[in-house]
Image 1 (cartoon, rainbow, N blue to C red):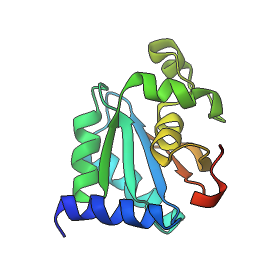
Image 2 (image 1 turned 45 degrees about the vertical axis):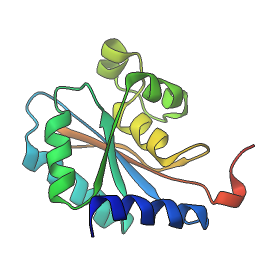
Image 3 (image 1 turned 90 degrees about the vertical axis):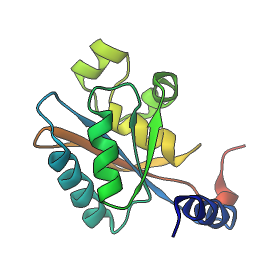
Image 4 (image 1 turned 135 degrees about the vertical axis):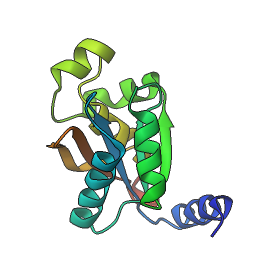
Length: 147
């Protein structure tokens, strides 16, 4: 399936009320592409799926996260800092490093929440897997979205 087809299919399924899972990811300076891939695969196994991987677009590790998402055959969604700040208040964990560098509670949680859409809820709070932080959020049913 071409990447354009995947976007159309996902949009169509969402219009029908299908719920999606977004995996938010972050990493430290020691994280390599394999670390990101292992974390994505671990989260997808636990969640029995995962539709997209999201992170801060300007983070130094973003290219490695993108390459890992591609290798895992999952769409990649780079997000601007302002988007992560919109959902920072919904994070349930707190990273002092993320707070001091970016003013957000958790890159992984905020990215997952924003990518999953309005009203989404964390289904996997931030956890550390080696040099990676990973979290996941599920979108709400189309009929249950907040007005």
